[in-house]
Length: 456
Image (tube, rainbow, N blue to C red; front, side, top):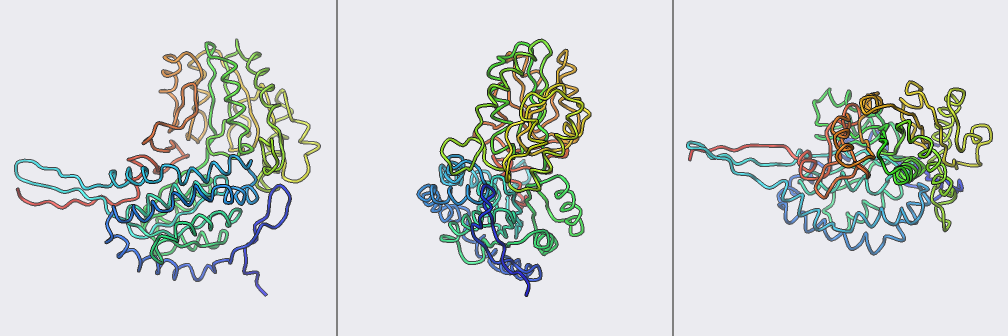
């Protein structure tokens, strides 16, 4: 008898958390057809009415944050406090976010002496949202919310690693949405491929570069609109006039939070050779403070990796690099790995930029440190490789800002993380991004520009 349910397991304990019905790949076109039928009436409601319906979910996310956060931790592993915060982020400020989306998509009037043109931003139709497991409620939110507010209907295909929390997210919205406006397809590669090949108009995907490349190729057959947030190999540059203690603390937090399973995790660290000894000492001290354990346990700062496969991938990269580097912390885990999916912080120094661990995405709790002699060399090292999602520079403000402007990344932080001010997009460069989301310009990517012109 075929297995028709998708089981979800706690990465900390291996216990089964729950299951959802697998959507047969052959039924995906029918799901998309229901979304197509619902899209016209949904658009005709108008932007303000759509926003009012969606806004009702905000208080629910806040009220149910603890219960949903516990589910998120049990399914994905991150510390409970972070999981609750992730759920609350979907509700907090939701009304204001929807107002921003409505304003971003509002018609604009353009005119000259002879012609009056109205520029509209209309829905594409049906949006396929394919989301990852590392932020399993906020990533569906970042994709579904602007797509729905723009008047699209959405078929969500969450990661097979975290189907329960994604379904819970959709269930909250579906309390207020008309039938068929938001649907969920559960499964793995077969369901994702079926959705990409179905009659959708827009594909929004966050995940690996390789998967994104396959999606882009498949979507090209129908010239479908595609929005891809792909892998990262973020660089941190520490100049010789930086606050070394603050830079090391940032490096530890950004390398090890969520067990390094963050698209903008710091994976490559380039430090001026004059301050490298002090930085390395401070980084190791900060890394030792990251206690590893079950995300539900009080005091845990680093939960488990999502599964054994991801843990093995990280250890393979470290094992390959060890003969050519200077290990500072955690390298013994290569020969004696912790039980289960747990993996503590690893710090490696004197890491040659040409090693695989400096070129391919690690997505684990590993900080790799190299040195440089001047700003030119720092920029050249940071700009190596195919990825360009985020980067950070620590140093005196003006000098660090000048270096930041030369980095080939979509988001650069100066003496802070990469996240921008309210309204800034989440955007990658090079092979880390193909389109982008969030902020006024990101919201507009979920809409088709259409102009209607008349004589004045």
